[in-house]
Length: 117
Length: 107
Image 1 (spheres, rainbow over the protein chains, first blue to last red):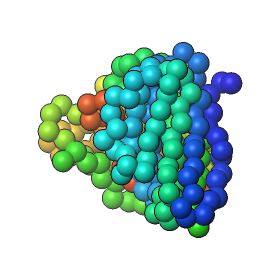
Image 2 (cartoon, rainbow over the protein chains, first blue to last red):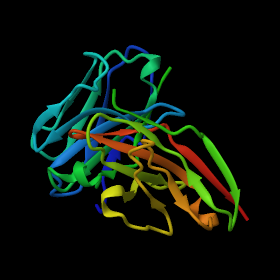
Image 3 (cartoon, rainbow over the protein chains, first blue to last red):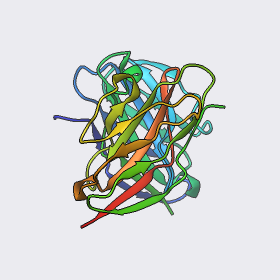
Image 4 (cartoon, chains in turn red, blue):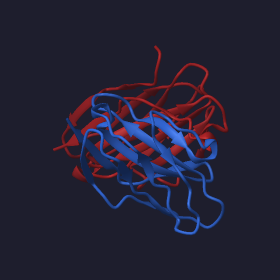
């Protein structure tokens, strides 16, 4: 595909269930970022990877949130025991180079909208 | 603490009017700032970066370190400029975004 692909686009789940959100970056992009965006707010950093290595997970709100990128391509963000406050748009972005963030050249996916009932 | 503030949630103007979207930042060091835009039903995308000193789609933004601002300006707004605009600050290896301003340009 031409851009960053995220799935599912929409996810409705019940409180207490686990959810997995997937991000397929642009082919060859080395860095991958996860952001969360609550209604009326800007994107909030969660974590990022260079290749398969998780470089920074300081934005993950608690230990229910985890992310992986085992082969340096597709990434999965997992939220365990979901709570209503987890409802948000989850955005993935990738950049071609390690310096992508320095030039601001992040390519975003369409996002996964999570609703926890 | 590093922070980006966009004080206006909504800015409405008529076509042909000047536009200024405000962005203020808090950062200890030499800041690198960006504007991102999200048009209706499209992805969030980079509009411009201060280091390039470029004009994109008629928009410009000047970094004012004295006022810690990076306002986005366009002299004559067009209807197709209607979108959500986010100011972002690079903090080491990640971007910090503001809360965004929705620009509505009426015909």
